[in-house]
Each structure stands twice: as structure tokens, then as C-alpha cells.
Length: 327
Image (cartoon, rainbow, N blue to C red; front, side, top):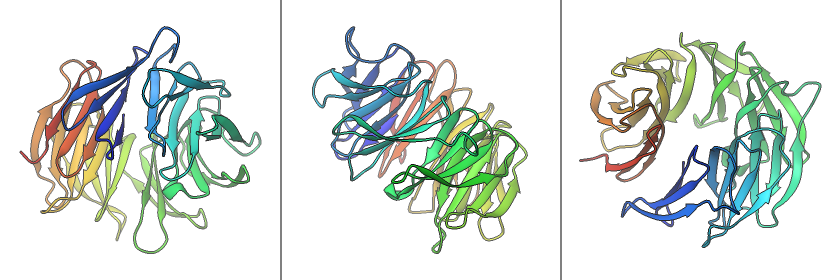
């Protein structure tokens, strides 16, 4: 799922090969992006808005589609040889980065629909699928995480690998940026049950936190990090000591995704679970404020928070819910 606050729209990607564009203020469906001639031939796995407002999607068919702003037509971008795991577009430039199960990342010019660079290092880089990446503030550096447990830092201008983050013993599943007022920190989480904290300038390991369970997602907020895992718990990490300050209970199944948003009484923590429920916790006290049954059958695996009031959730049942998280 991707959100564009300027147009007040969001777009969902589905296993039925299509994308759907909704207005989150009116809850109305605006467009369906799929025809017999245009679009994906397999599951759509990732989607984002380009700086010019166009929608860009990637799928298990190894293809990236740059969609027309009005019609259900698209320009196909070919180059990857495996399923697309993530795409991310620059907010101010005509640049997009994609990662794939083919062990590479690619840098694209969205306006021209052309490939600029392929990020690959066969000797020291990823030896297995690239699951995700972190692209802080449209900078020249991008950090990728792979199934091999390796993190790689790339310069997207030179297409060269700068350094590696080699500490996890299992696949990397989540990456986040934590800005503590000085040098930003890179946060990585893995299936090995550890969260690693890295200096973004030197790529040196700062701290390694044992969170016990396999990590599915990490979110950063003003007072720390929130980690969601396979043991149904949320853990709040204090950045002053890099220790677990709170364990948040309530989920009856695996925690899939975590989001945070500032609120008048402190940050709110939104998390989705394998049983289709979304829980909202107070980050200061750890108290569960309320829960919402977002998915009737299966997991709720995609959530977005759009301040000051909109919360959007989608899951395995193919439905989308939008609600006011203050009422």
C-alpha cells in the first residue's frame, strides 16, 4: 500500500494482479489498474507514488509498471530476473529504486522509464534474495537487506558498494532509520531474533539487542523503537540504554506490521496481526487503548496512518477499511 496526501488517495496491490486507487477522505474507489493488455501477470507485491504523482508497481512477474496518471495504461520496465520485493520513489526527483529476488537492486529514471544503474557485487554483496532496502531522505546512499542476513550500503550515483553490515545470522526482515539528533542510526531486524544498531557514517555496529523472537517489523518514534515479532509481542526499546523498556501484549497471533504516529498525549503505536486484528497502544504506558477487527479471514498485513485522523488497513480477505483513529 502507498499513500499520497496531496491527492488524498492511496493505492493497494493485490494477488489478483490488479491495483486499486481509493480516496481516503471519501472512501470511494477511483481507479482499477489492470486490463487484459496492461499490467501485471502475477501477484503485485509492491507499489509507490512517484514525485510526479504517477503510480509505480512491481510484481512477482519480475516487471515494474509505470502507470498513466489518468488511464489504466502503463509502461513496462524490464531488467529484473526475479520477483520484485520493493520499490521506492524519490519524493522530489525522477528517481526510483527497486529490489528483487534476483539478488540485485536497480536505479531507474521514472520520467524516461529507463534503467540508470544495477547495484550488484557478486563477491561481497548479496548471495540471496534482496528482501528490502532503506533510502534515507533521498540521499546518495541506500542500505539493502537480504535473505543471506547481510546488509549492504550502496552509492547509487557510482553504483558501487560502500560497506557491509554483517552481524545477523538469519534473513534480514526489517530496516529503519532512527535519528537521535546527531548522526542517524541504521536499525536492522532479523529472523535471528536480534535488532542491530549501526552508525550510518562508519557502518560500525553500535549495539545488538536480543528481542528473543524473529523480527517482522520495526518502527521508530520520538522516544525509541517498537519491534513486532512472531511471538505476538511488541517490544519498546529505549535508545538511551538500548534495552527493552516495555513489552506490549494483546495480540493473539504473529505481529505483521508496526506504525507510530505522534499524538497530543504521546506517540501511538499501531500494529497488525495474523488474526486480522489491529491494536493501538500508548507508547508511554504500554496500555492497549483499543482494537479493531480489520480483516475477517486471515492476516491484516498492511497498515498506514495518515494524520490527523485516518487509519487504513488491508489484509488477506481482499477488503480495505478506513477509520478515524481518534473516535
